[in-house]
Image (cartoon, rainbow, N blue to C red; front, side, top):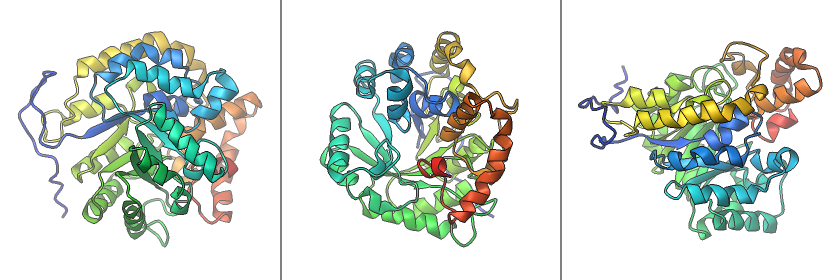
Length: 374
């Protein structure tokens, strides 16, 4: 019987200035990047981030994700905005909280490998414009694609967070390829590369709660860098997986503000704050402060984007993701593309075809750019 003893009960205190917990869970907020990428096809405009930027800066997040992923492409292609100006603008409003970006290693923020000199300059300019944490991943967990960008991140004095893209060949973790030994070895590889932290990047919401516990426990016992769990809500399991990961000693959890949460996005921060209150892992966040941010998002911002939500089904979970394994950030874009082609009624056919094509390609992880290719 496993003793889940990383969470201990403490005195309940609801005040915003309550004493700091023994080992508070750190939170990275994804609202301003992965939140709108997952729900609204990455159409969030900078002008709609400014109204909440200063208030979010006061929450106490470990980091806020503001850039990278599909934002660079979408800002050019659809929004007629300058991606570099977004970093500089938000930095003027958020002076306390570190900025994080999603970097596709040698793919940068595109869909193919770029030349080494371009990769180096891109990282240098990103750092110079205000980026602090570089969440770096390769779609195949092939860390040879890190060899150009990681030294530049380090030279710039910035935080290198190495990702392990989480995937499976079975309904749960295990099997011949993606088992516990696989993830432990990948974590050791990242530690050897100088990772300042390691992210379990569950881009499709596949990680089950007890698997989350086992993998976090194993990584904490095997490597020294802090462990971050990034898990989309798509299958409905991520809130439970967060809790089990916290019991196992995870250091950082990714969440969104509730109007930008759930469905193919991430679990909301507010229920987690209340859950951990009165424990040794209390976030220390002020729930009333979070509610004020939500009110602005709900009343002033979201009405502009509601038409982009996936309305092909009523349920906010899609347990079929355990079969098709399509990442949350891609699902909203896939739905939008099918809608534009007047073919949204065929989305179930697309989902059924995905596992077959993935098997033909050798059971590769599905995350940009492999998810788009498949």
